[in-house]
Each structure stands twice: as structure tokens, then as C-alpha cells.
Length: 499
Image 1: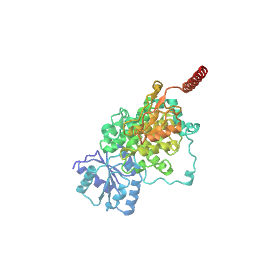
Image 2 (image 1 turned 180 degrees about the vertical axis):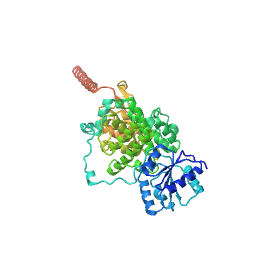
Image 3 (image 1 turned 45 degrees about the vertical axis):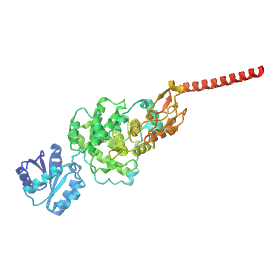
Image 4 (image 1 turned 135 degrees about the vertical axis):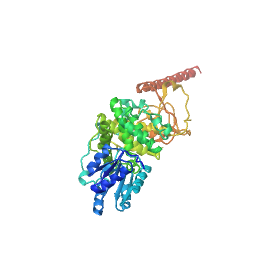
């Protein structure tokens, strides 16, 4: 049998078994390195990223239990294909598979044939190796002191506005978000691999892109779509932030790919959970992201992208307050893209219920660890995607009046308070939603957003007049009506005198 891996790393604290194992590997045509301590083994794994780990646990029960505990509590070994060698090793298989991504047991005594069979089994059933290590199986304990610790103040913009809706419309006006198409229509189509044709969200070059390209070839279709989708959302959000430099945008693309691949693990149910109100789960996810950032920087030498992922971990766990710095903005975009994936996609399909739930949580202020501008961009992107996902042609009624010269059609996600409807708004089934001549406020627009995520609505038409022009138009109409009334009165008076 010819081994296909680059090298085999033997981790054994006993010289005798390690030397015998090395001889067998060389007899099978492979090469190996021996590590006598865990630190040496970690160093070799960093040097040989495609190696097998052969772990000699010892012969005595106490020694095996101690070695097993060290192995399973060290995140550097979680993603490495491992052969666990010990007397009656099969009894430890279920415990090993709770932490290790690809592993098999080999009981002593063994020969070259059984060792070759173990290698063959790992090669055949090898699971994709992630670039990020998972967090430990249980969250760290939360003490009373840690529960009562002071949290960083949210961004000052949250304090300057009465509500998140008020913040959204204020930021939308300042950065003209209501005039932009953030790409939600394209994002909503990211349900099949052949429909993903928008690739500007991928970094142009670099080791991260090369690694992820090779890595995604080992993934299933749904996992590949997930990686593309999260990276796409991250790029669409950051593309709406004009204050970011081109350099940080490119680095953020690398961070988006690394983040998405790092969380796409078979057992990572925590990355599909709602952590908005669960402080323990926030700590749990944050720990995993910190480990991911460490490996991202050490293994792929992507220091800047590593900083962004590490910043996202600290923001998530309230260890620091979000700022206007570029790394903080990029980290907020990662968290926002992750939230969209958690709430709005279920089993690879867009969830209207999840969309409405995410918007409701945003409005209630549960995600203040995210930069206000990024949060507003995320809400706009989700609204665009939600409206685009609703099927059905818009066959609503349209009034044909003289005011067509003074009106325009707007997307529902582009409505702003103060706009005045020039026509009634109908659903596609003909049911009236809003009457004409209605001046929209924050609450009415919010209700339209929620409704449009589950039901196709007609296109709103609004007057193009400014508020002053609307007042003047209303005044002129009143003056015309008064003049018409006076004219009728005069005609009646003249007719009475003639009689």
C-alpha cells in the first residue's frame, strides 16, 4: 500500500512503541516524524498540514486515560486525521469521535496489515479538514462575578436615537441607503450552485483563496453554497460602506471565506443556534472564533484576516465595544452575515418566518454589538432579499390619474417616512393594503416590510413633491375649491336676481 498523505506524525511518550511504529510506516512506503511531547506534536502539525497523527496512548489504563484527556482538550488536534493506538482501543472510539473529525482506533498488538487497513480506512472515509478548530464540547462555567461584570457601552449612535427604526432611517438618509440596491435580489437566489454567478465577493488571490478552493472541492453541495452565501452577504454589506479602504475590503473577503468555512462543521449545531439572549452560548461561540483566528493566522499567514475574526469574537462576547475603525466594521459585517445565515436560511431555503424574526430582533436592539451602520445595511439587505423571494406577479390595480406626472414608483425597502402615496397600495390578490394620499411614517413602513416578506405587494407609488410643494399643492387645491364655490354662489345670486 502506498500512503497518499505527506507524512505521518507519531506522538508517543515511549521510545520503544514509537520506533516500531516508524519502521512499519517506512515499510509501507511512507515517511514519518516522531514527537515525544504534545508541544513537539503541535509544532510538527503546523509544519506538515496534511499529515496523519498516530497517537500511542500507552499500555496502562491510568496512562491511557491521562493521554486521552490531553488529546481531547487540545484544539490543535481536533481537525487532524488520527489513529488512536492502545490496548482494546475500540472502547474509546465513541469518545474520540465526539471531538475529533476523522479518527479510527487500532488495538495492540498490531502488525503491518492492520496498520495499513487503518490508513486505508482513514483515506476512504476522510472528512474535510476545517481551517478552524471547534470550541470545547461544553461552554466555560459562568460565575456570579462574570454575570455581573460591566459590559462595554454600545456605539454612541445607538444612544443618540430613540429606536433602531429611527437609527435606520437616519443612517439611510445620511448614507443614501434608501437610494441604493444592496444586491438582495441576487442574494435571495443563492439556493442552487448554478445560480451563484456573482463572484466579486471572492478574494482575487492569496493563500486563503487557494486553500478554500481546494477545501471546497471536498465539501458537499449544500456546504459549498453556504460558504459562498455567507461570503456574498459579507461582501454586499461592506460594499455599501463608503468609508472603507479598498485594502480592508479585500482582506475582509478573506476573513469572510475563513469564517464561513470555519463554522461549517458537521457537529457545530451551536453555529445554527440563536445566541442573542444566551450569554453562555455567546461565550461558547466566541471561544471557537478565537481559536479559528489563531489557526488562521498561524497556518495560512493571514494576519489581517485573523485580526478581523478575532475582533468579531470579542465583539460577540462583549469584551470590547464596537468602534468606527475599519477592523471593527469588517468584524461587525461578519457577525451580521452570520446572523442572516442563522435566521433566514433553513435547510438551504429562504425562510420568511426567520426573516421577520431577525428584523424584529434588530428592531428590539438585541444586536448592539454590531456597528450601527452595518446593522442598517444588514436590515436593508434582508428586506430586499425577503421581497425578492416572495413569488407571484404583481397584478395590483393602478389608478390612472392626472398626478402621474408628479409621482414615482419605489421599492418597498426604499420607502422613507414623510413619503405620500399617490395611489392605493394593493396586494397581488387585489386586496387593499393602504389608501392613497396617505403620509407614511416609521410604523406604517415597518408593517409593510413585515408583510412584504410573506406576501407579494404591488409597487408603491409616491408623490415626487417635497413637503413644501405638497403644502403648496394642497393649498392651491383648497383655493381652487374655494374659488369654485364662490363662483357657484355668484352664479346662483345672479340667477335669483334675473328671476
